[in-house]
Length: 275
Image (cartoon, rainbow, N blue to C red; front, side, top):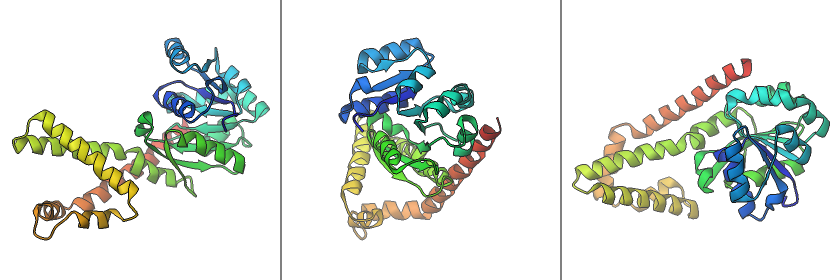
């Protein structure tokens, strides 16, 4: 993959993170191209990452074998239709990281035979610890699947889903998931201050505890349930806290919230498809 030319239409935070991740994993900056309407952003990317900046989207497509669509969802149709002819001529792999834009919409804008991988990354990709769900349409080859996976793996883990509709579930789990953890951290910080700790101490304890728990979970072969039981001594402080969570319907509330997020993801894709 390190010899592949990869182009980005849109040079915002996620595209910048992907380029940084690719470079960190050994990809030459000279193999990366980017276009953006914000000229200051392009200048910053050129200065900080030494990537090639393009005067327009067409230049990116002419140069690249993989084109990453990294513009806002509400302008993606306009962008896609403006370059559809060139996409059909050059036939690059198209990787979309635009939330809520289905492969059917992308195919209708770019051409039915376009090789498209739709991705659902999350914000931790900005610090190279992301989790991305991917789905490929029938035009994508095995080599192209590997390319798309490696691009997204440069900022974290990448997992394929069998059905495109599963990306709505991915949205509910990892796409929206960071906010769930931030909400818990926020609540724990507030409670810690109520218990008498100062704000700085409360925040650091909560943040490091979250990091430590996640690291243990990632490095262990045991399930979260097993790990929870390991640190929950019978009759101890942790058991009392867990019982309080359970009495408040914690598990059911999490399930309800994630179903709501999944349903909203489905709802949001419909007006975009019809726009």
